[in-house]
Every structure is written in C-alpha cells, then in structure tokens.
Image (cartoon, rainbow, N blue to C red; front, side, top):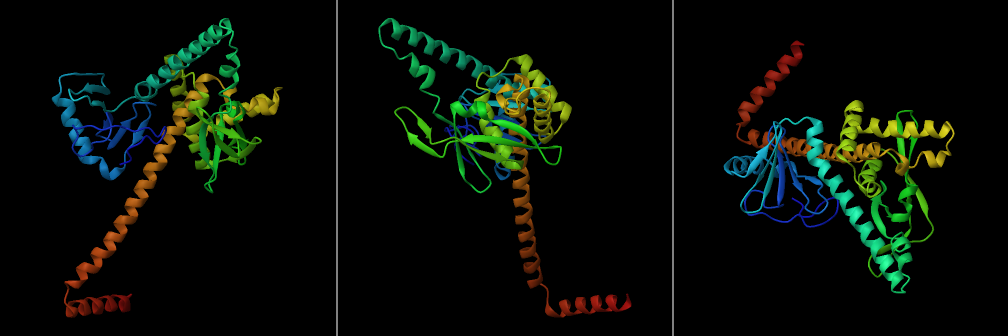
Length: 344
C-alpha cells in the first residue's frame, strides 16, 4: 500500500488499530462492494487501496466499527471515532447524493473557508503594509501567479507544469466523433525554484489531451480551478448532473458540447470553452466524475493484473498436476482423444 496521498503526495499517517492495514488515520470501507479507502487528512481525498490488501482489513474495520460506542450513522453511512484516534467511515448501500455529501461536501466547504481566510489575510496584510509605507500589495496580487499549482502528464510521459495564472486558459472542447472531447492544457516548459515556491518559466505552450490522459489531467487541475469549493446546494446539483448522464465521459462531452454551442451563439470561441467559465455546479460535477472515473480505471487495471496472474498460476498448476499422473495413464488418455477425433 502506498503511504502518501496519490493526489497531494502528503503522508497518509499510521494507525495501530487495524493490524492488517496500519496506514491512515481515517479509513472508509464498503464491505458489500469490497472497497477500502484511506482519506487524506490534508486534501480530504479518498485513496482507493489495492485489491490484495483490502479483505482482511475490511473485516477488521467492520469489527472495530461495531465494537466502539462513539459512533453515529444514517441509513447508509456511519462514522465511528475509536479511542486510539482512528476514524472509520462505514458505507452500506448509500444513495449517490448522500455518499457524495460525505465524500466531497466537506472538502468543498473546507476549500471555501480556506480561500476566504487566505484572501482576507492577504488583503489585511496589504492594507497594513501600505499604511506602514511598505508597498507589498503587488506581491499578494501578482507574486503567486507564476507558482506551479498542477503537474500533469501526456501519454508519452512528458510532464506539463501548469501555473496559477494559466488555470483560466484551460479549455474543454468537442472533438470527433461528436460524443468525444479534449482538454487543452496551457503549460510552461521549465520550472525554477523560487524563494517560497516552484515557478513555471518560459513562453506558454499548449497541449491537447483526450481519453484517459484527459481524465487524469482533469482530476489534477479541476481542484485548483475549483479552489473556492462549493455549497451544499451546488454539490447536490452536481450530483444530479452525474446521475443524469450516468457516465463521466458523457458528462465531459456534454460540457464541451454546451460550451461549443455557446461559442457558436455569439461568444468568442476560446472564451466559451474555458473551464473556469462553466457554472460552479458543472465544474464540481466534472471534478467528482474525473476522480470516480480514475478509480474505476485503476480498479479495472487491478482486475486485469489479477486475471493475468491467475492464468499464469493455472498454467503452472496444470503442469504440476500432470507430473503426478503416470505415463501409462497419460498415453491411455491420449488414445481416447484420438478415437474421439476419428469418430467425428
């Protein structure tokens, strides 16, 4: 199991409660579906764990959940706080809306509060400095615009560094066939370490991503675009959008198509296709869909690897079994097979 968050790369922490899974201080599990997540304390994202590390840990989480008295729940989701500091989120058969409220609602609200505090502190510091005669207001306005806030990869492995100023240039556009879409990523070719952060340098370039690469890039960039989070009502509307289209790819294609139509109706094309101009609930829905699609693809990859391992194990087992069969018996079986073939 990875020990750092796959989204923010922060340490996931440890626990001394779940012997078979000592990673994480907040675990979410769904026994019916065989799912186990580690919830990051910093970005609040859910990290889906590998298949081979889940089963015993899920059973242990289930036992610990029912053994503790400090718990509360709805019909579908429960939360238990263990004395050792571990938090367990138990998922039954949740409705998508309730599940989304637990999984994303707190993170979106947390972002909103954090952005308000940061903006307020920056404004107060700028005013105080101006009164004192130090003109540093420009530093808060322009100083962080070149900071690298996201790094995504093209299918060939090339890394694209996206700076804060370029987030407003990210576009979602329709592609061929009609139900397809692409993500246009503005990036800087170089990175340089600054006093407080890594900055992107060089002339802005653009890369067009589609398919799984675009989904992965969207999952990385959209949290930065949605830095102000969302309200409970916006989360509710975002979930309704996901339920309506049912497939993440369709949701992205619809968003791209809607913006293309808006551009054709009178807006400038490049302005209409920019992600930051989408309605807040649409942006939140795209972020949620990107993360769930990435999890689905990861799960499919694990299943494919397991199937490959099973086939190899089956081949070896078949050979091993034959070693125990006498040659006379093998010859008798081969003669029966030949007789069957001749009859047919």
